Length: 152
Image (cartoon, rainbow, N blue to C red; front, side, top):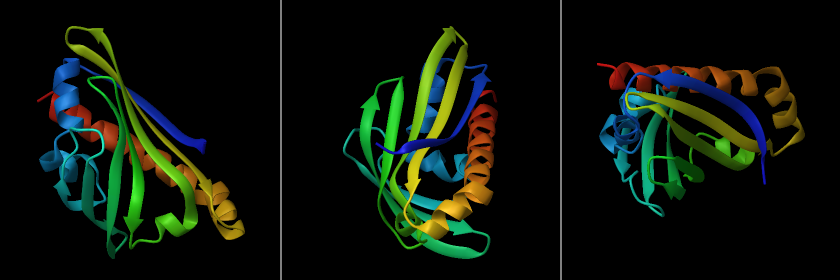
């Protein structure tokens, strides 16, 4: 099992079903994840595949991920199947997770976690210096975007 590298959480003033609908809607992924330009596939059934056209600091590529775990209105876990951005060469066993918890009828706690192991010595150094921080910042933006969409 890979190591937890980044964890963010937020409280969203919306029902758990509303938040769940956002994190499982392929058409909203480009509005939720700032690196995604366009996404195809499905995000609402375990075993499904999504392919994302990505852009990161001017670099474009694709990432194909598989939904390996889905517990309705509680949890999603994605793993990278293939990518052209170099993440799969730098990271071993990357997993990206959302966890939802109902606090009240219109209040939901959402947690976003990223797990991986740096694959090379250089990746270990880069992870310590910047990758973990960048991953945490991206997760914070993703949660902020989900909150904005859900609370409209």
